[in-house]
Length: 284
Image 1 (cartoon, rainbow, N blue to C red):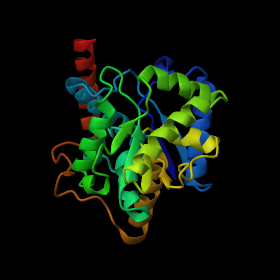
Image 2: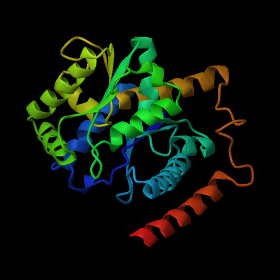
Image 3: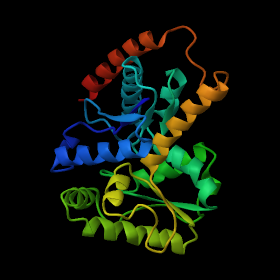
Image 4: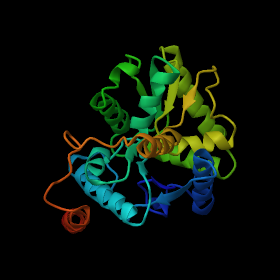
């Protein structure tokens, strides 16, 4: 089967990573190793820089990503993980798509209960609002009914780096010098463990591939299991498709994921494309 890892970034990363060719190659190789030889993963990109936790821009994010998921479905993909750590557009895309759609943190939280009792999440600082990513991830955990799976005190913690500093260190790590990134990640993870976490979740879709590259994905330096959110999302897609094939299990259409009854996904995709273009033009 073919799966999509939606990175919610433009192909040029908007200057976040210097060596983009090496960066995307690293992520794609990692993802394809995760799903195994019988399946494949394709990276999916946004057309514009829309990822934001600002109230209006989250609406634009959602419209854009739902449209992207419907395009991936039309292109024959068998599932999509919306891998940005704030899980943008997951519920909305799931309500209309026929293929499985999962969030990366949503998936990691579900898996964490099989690995430990209390998790902590390592993320990065937001750009305009440094606390925005951690705040949104914790809010989403409550939305999923998973807040009790997390430690009580500050369960989602950003690396002790600004948004800009993180991407400089991450870009260095992709290019062969991982010291600064690995040190920052380890310090944050160790703090979560000291405060009661017996499992640590990567709260950024980019962490796993680099941690794996440097041989540090299995566990933290104080020997606590580490869950990569992107790997969790990709494996969740495989599980959902396997259960559909073997037992007929499919998404419920009688509750929050009820599909629009009056329109086909194709018509919804056309409306979303028009609407997102109008909003982006109005605020751009």
